[in-house]
Image 1 (tube, rainbow, N blue to C red):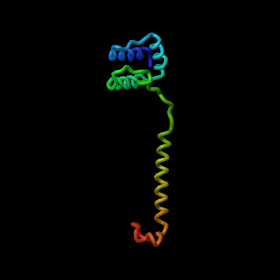
Image 2 (cartoon, helix red, strand yellow; image 1 turned 60 degrees about the vertical axis):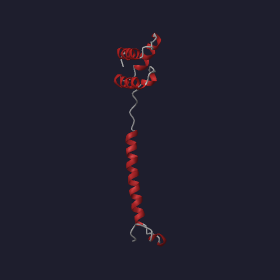
Image 3 (tube, helix red, strand yellow; image 1 turned 180 degrees about the vertical axis):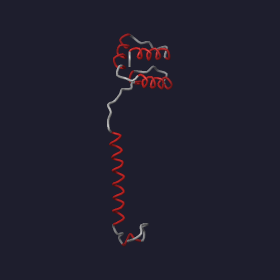
Image 4 (cartoon, helix red, strand yellow; image 1 turned 180 degrees about the horizontal axis):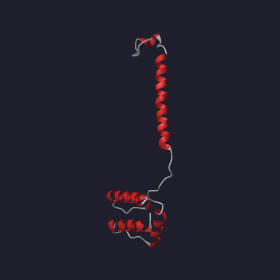
Length: 112
């Protein structure tokens, strides 16, 4: 985010929350921290915050940091697929085992 965009955020905050005034050192902190954020995402969070809160936001209320890409969703999909396959294998194995005599009359499975 550029300094101009940070300034736009702060102007919006001050215009929506008239009792909120920003000091020079606070603006410097916002410049440093917000340089790592995406303007559009922060603005979306700010607009949401304005709709739900009567208090001005802190940086942490509207911060959106770009996280490093990870393969967690891919791993999760792999685990789900492996789990389904394992369950299918176990069900097939269970159907191959003969039903004990004492359970045969209560079982919904056809006896071998």
